Length: 65
Image 1: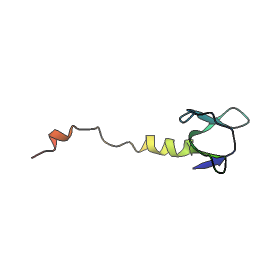
Image 2 (image 1 turned 180 degrees about the vertical axis):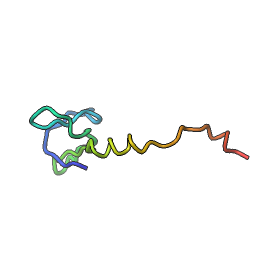
Image 3 (image 1 turned 90 degrees about the horizontal axis):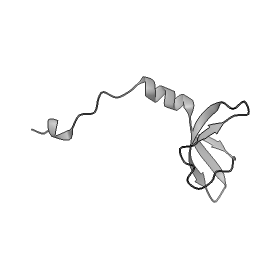
C-alpha cells in the first residue's frame, strides 16, 4: 500500500493517485480519519495481478458432485 497525504473526498475510493508529472501511480483505497493519511494500491501491484490472471471463472454448480 502507498501511504499519502493527498486530501480525498468521500466516495473517491477507486480514483487514481497521480504524481507531479500526472502519471497514475496508484488507486485510492481508503482514508484513516484518525491520522488523515490516505492509502492507495500501487499500480505495480495491479500490473502483477493482470499478468497473473486466474483461470476463467466457473459456476459452482459445475464443481458439485
